[in-house]
Amino acid sequence: IDIVDAADSFHGIISSSATWTKTNSPYTLDGPTAVASGVTITVEPGVTVNLNGYYLQVNGTLIARGTESEKIYFNNGQVIITSSATSNSIFENTVTNSLQTSATVKITKNTFNKLSAGGSSTITDTEVIETCTLSDSAQLKSNNINARIVVKRGSVEISNNRLNDGIHCDMGGGHVTITNNEIRNRNAYPLILVAGGDADISNNRLIGDNTANGITIGGSYHSGIQTNAKIIENQISNCKTALSLSFCWAEVKRNAICNNDLGIDIAIGSSFNIPAPGTNAIDIEYNTVAKNVVGVQFQPDGLTATISNNNMQDNTDYNFRLAG
Image (cartoon, rainbow, N blue to C red; front, side, top):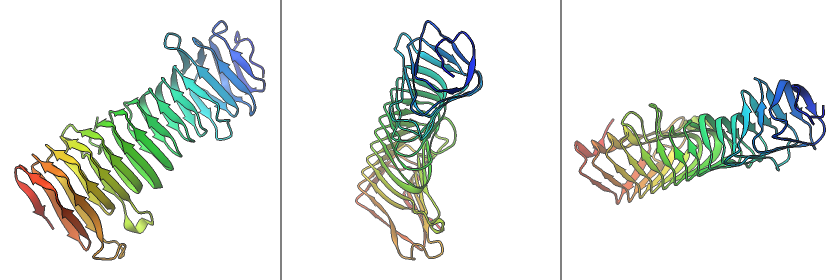
């Protein structure tokens, strides 16, 4: 089909490049619709696209560039940009119910109910309300995210954001960089959870509501996927346990861990002799752990930890407790 005039609703495969104009708006789908490979659809500022419960699948290019005063609306459905799409698609100044992209897309100044971003997509100055999923080499920079972020795979960067429902990284061997964010929680899930991959967590400010853990690093040695974390120069406060370490390798340095129930909880053990008993799996150095109920709690189970050169003071019950 060729979409030149939007007087009638439409569906099918769009086979010719076109511009969807404000004059002809709204554009309404009455069935699943696809933009063919090699085809470019350009959407003008002020256009409304009523997806009507269907999806718009982009195998070519979609350029939806609104303005602050004339946003583009994709209502009641899903825009899917497939892995076969070109890397020229743009989402800017839109209000979109749901965007899923496996290709590289420039995404800036939008409001999404649901966002699933992959490829090498960069998301900036955007608000996500309900769900947010990241994979491949996606970068989330300088956004306001009300949804809990789920990192699935790949090498993902999350930086300079305001995150209001934390981050869940169960990556199956991937890598995540989490830096310079302000992170809070809206439920009892950890503000940051990492399992089954590598994480660099630095210069974040984590502020709990006294119901959730701050950073939880865990995994299963016998799963075949190691969990490795570097936790550097973060501020963690008002959490049940600020930092929980189990079945992982971790380097913890120069963090400020204050006003929590438990500052650092270390519970490390060998599973199927992996790593071998006696392995030093945890290094904790140069941290300030103060004004918690318990500062550091260590529960050894065949593995060792190095805890040195820390400032542990003014924790009300114990500065250091050996358990188990």
